[in-house]
Length: 358
Ligand code: G3P
Ligand code: CA
Image (tube, rainbow, N blue to C red; front, side, top):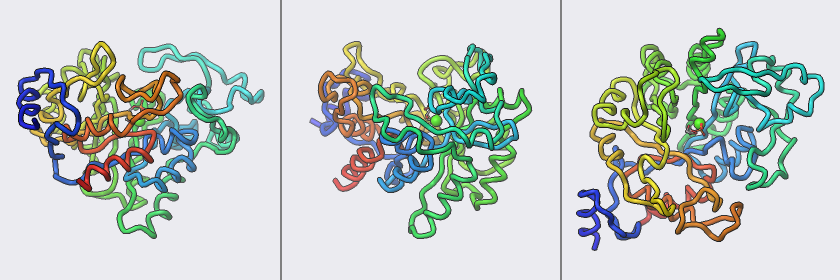
């Protein structure tokens, strides 16, 4: 059966095969896939807090992922966006009411409060809250502050003192060309901090990721640290009008990426699209082609709530209920991915370990 499944897959024909019936493809290096805790253990704690990263490490994650933006005084802090009303209590602070603004970020109008309009001391008076309160617990709202990248690296260094295998860090530069345009570039403080904490050379436990291209090329010119080109399911890099992520997934596009990066971080449906019914379809050739170009593949984002799972792995009709995330991840592991981003390192680590034990 496995041979039939592999043959159908090679011909890009519908296989109808289960994850068990597929022939698992190897990772690029033959090493086990890594679990990257997406915004920390963000399925269980407010994202991008030290507590979210701490829990992710306790649950066995190999890397923690801080998205990085800058403050008015040039400090790198962990937030998914520079607009912070969805993940903090900023709107409840009357002293900051006048900071509300509308800006154009990567071509889109955004209204709210922006990190670049706050000093670090001001941002530190805010508290994090759950982004998805309809799907996840709000029990931890109001407890944690916004961590700086330096605080995250300090915490990681302390944690790694007692570990044989260090937990790595997987920072993302958010809106890098926007921040360059307002005089707050990521690159210098990012590289300086990583260097100060001992991240040097191609095998350092770090991956720097970006949806844009220019900052990765600039980082490559200044650093040997591993770099990851992120790819969304639609559109293209904000700093490269006319370039699409779809074109970047072609063999020629992947070869071009290999000139400046070590891997790709694709939206997961670029690896396994969903059918019109919402079930998992057949894998594309992206992992095979990326490996042929020498690139690792780390798709995102794997989440346990029914709302996010493919039909077939859902555990009922309640969007906030939990389904079989392990089954979804198993199908991806069979394609040979080199790692994955998950809000739920608890389930992701268990699934990867189970696969390794076979
Ligand atoms: O960085 C990988 C993944 O996190 C990209 O999506 O929007 O969650 O940063 P986003
Ligand atoms: Ca990210």
